[in-house]
Structure formats: C-alpha cells, structure tokens
Length: 311
Image (cartoon, rainbow, N blue to C red):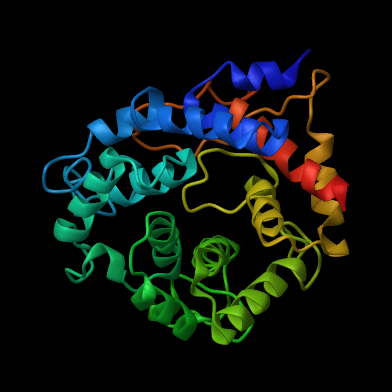
C-alpha cells in the first residue's frame, strides 16, 4: 500500500504537513497547500464556528452550556481546545481569516478562572501550556504565561495542575502540556536561560520515566499512555511525548523503548490505528472511529520514526 498517497488523500491541513515533513516537497507547493487550510475543510470549518465575541461554543475552557453543578466531564467544543486544534492544523498565521479570529480572542475572550485575558493565561500549567502554544503559533504575547509556568515548576522537574491545591509530585499530562508550550515559545524566538533550564528539567522528568513508566518501579501508571490518540487534548501518551522530543531534536537512549513500542504498533500496510479517543462533545470528527487506521496518527508516527531513524 502507498501510505503516503493515502495520507495525501485527505484535508489540506494534513496534506501540507505531509508534503513538508514526509515528502520534502518544494516550499512553493507546501505554501500553496497550506493556503487552502483557511478556505477548505477542517480549518475553514473551525474558523466559521467562531462567534463575534471571539469564543467557540459560548465558553473559554468549557462550553457555555455546561452545568457546573453536575459532575465534571470533558468537552472539546470551547475556545481553548478549538485553538489547540487550529494550531495543529497549521494555517498561515498571516491569513486574514486567522488574523481576524485571533484578534477577536485577544480583545474579548476571558478565562472562567478569574476573568484573565486569554493570552495572560490562568493558573493551571496544563491550560497555560496549551494556550502558550497558541500564543506562539499566532504571534501573541504569552510572556505572562511563561512566568506562571516557570514559577510553577515542581522540584522533580515537571508540573501538576493540582499544584495550586498543594500537589508536590508532577503529572505526565501536565508536564507534556507545559513542555510543548515552552518549546513553542522558544522556537518562536523568545528563548531565555530560565526557559531553557525549565525545558531541560521537564524533559528529564519524562526521560527518567521512559515517557510512560513510574520511576520507582518501572510500572505503567496508566495503560492509556501506551495507546495512540489524536487529537491529544490535555492527555499524555508515548506518541505525543516522542513528537515533543522530535521538535526539540533531542535524541536520548531513554526514548528507545517508547520508539520501539510505537514501531511495533504499525499494521501490515504500514499504518497506525487510533487506539484511544478522548471522549467528549466535538464540533466535528477528524477521522474514523476508534480502532481503525487513522491518517493523523499514522502521519505523526511516521514523522517521529523518520526523525529518530535519521539519527
């Protein structure tokens, strides 16, 4: 099976990244495909769902229709997670449709936590890490979130969203979100010695655990971290962790087990399945149901393995 052709038979948001990261297509071809993200398919659909007040589905972290008096559940239709998805789709940040959408967010969107402007962030590192990625991708001022993240790093090198409630041990989930945000900020040209130290310490937290094992006894604290998912939302898994180290271009022998776990999951056609869907309401789905070959998961897996094997 021609897996590359299968990947290219998709949405512009995926095609342009396949052309760039797997095909090594000419820059002009990549740019032309990327330009379609705001006018066709998933990117255009997401942008069209934004309300004039800058929000998606009436809320910032959770949609406006959520009843806070009922038990917590995840929903992925609100502003924060739509912006996370928009970053992954990768529209040109200079496209007028994107500029208008981000201007609305900057002008109007506030966190439910204490009414903070979206790009100032709030208190939880998993939230701020994702929002910092958004700021970095779309040229916004995320300095306040960087300060909050640096101040909130725990003694073991990672982060935990329960730290404001006195948690002292880091979480895989919070740590990967914080690392992604800080790395995106650094790659956008905003590096500093303090940021570099925090990145290195957070990466060491994950490396010391092989991306998915307890440091104490090598056991797997949650089998879902060995399962491949997309979209990732706020959840950590081995593919998300490996993709972070790919972007950081940091090869380490302690990643080898996770790489081989990923490699072992390919089917006979060289495709990877969507093993774990993070359930919750969505505006629309990006692929098939759980269990079948998935283009996003396959693309991300191939991209990681191409990087690793080139080393």
